Length: 485
Image (cartoon, rainbow, N blue to C red):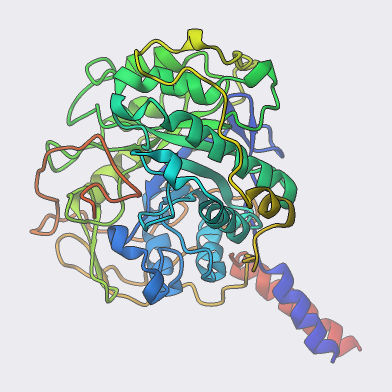
């Protein structure tokens, strides 16, 4: 019995966890160190929108074997965060989340999906805002709020994508932000930021930013104000530059932001193959004082030709040339220096919401938000039912089960996730598996026209154990204790 209890205790202590991050002004902050956090992210939606299938009980974080394969590859790449677009709150995600946690990666999660009734619509938006819709978004929060590596929730993704959608949509997106934040405040042990992922449509971008980040009645604790603002931008294409890409205009426009700003998607695919020269600007002095990093679109190759890994539904995968190009760009950065930066000073306070902030004719300038639909207040008060729960679990086998090949066809040997220690965030070099940056027919996606609009991760409609030594030491301690007894 003593041995059993001791081994149970061993299992409980063998799960390392990332430090939950916080928003402090216009930065993501590690509260233990006070350092700013820069997102080095990847859009993760294997299978595109088809990767979310309620009938088959499948979503991107439901298959541990797939997650192990992808976490190992993303760990080698140097990624420290994934964005997941479509999730089923009724599924168990413990193993997948624990794997990504072990690999040192945070999660930015969309609460909507492409299924009917599971997202706000750009057209007649008021018809899509009702209690059962909110219940589903709250269920996503319930399913992921207790994981320490849940970084943020997106209340919407490109619901505003052209001027015609600006008349009524803004107030409904802001209302969903309010509702999610109220639910989190009531039911979560920690504050988890909520914000909007915007399309880089410059005609309406600045009004969109002002609408979602201003404060009603000047209240700094206004629950409808976004905690962050993210941007899906594809204006840097090929061997461009900070000015040619108009990234300099973004920095100038966002320099007085009261909330964290980052790219929720980037990575123009025309011309192809991609060379990702924007990495140097995003994480360099051009931008890192204003932008908190970004998320490359996207991990798996789909019909839209944005992928860096080609894979089959059965599990085998092949790296594409874009994988090596991105890895090479990340390797040029000094991540230890980048992730140890301190806040640059006091962030500007949110401005008070006013019609004066709106400059585009037809853009909604009324900040009176929709009231909760019938039944929604009770859900916020009592919580969703049944309540999905998530927790980190112990993983014992870190080896990748599927065959993964380099672009030249050679098999990557001994591919596995390297579990990181408590609070250790992934960075290039954390997992030094040997890759061959060969070329081949699968090495790059075909060129295609870039789209500046995406919906739920498909542009064409479409954890951890501590080190082995630490575990062995604990086992030896248990054995010694039992022997002494």
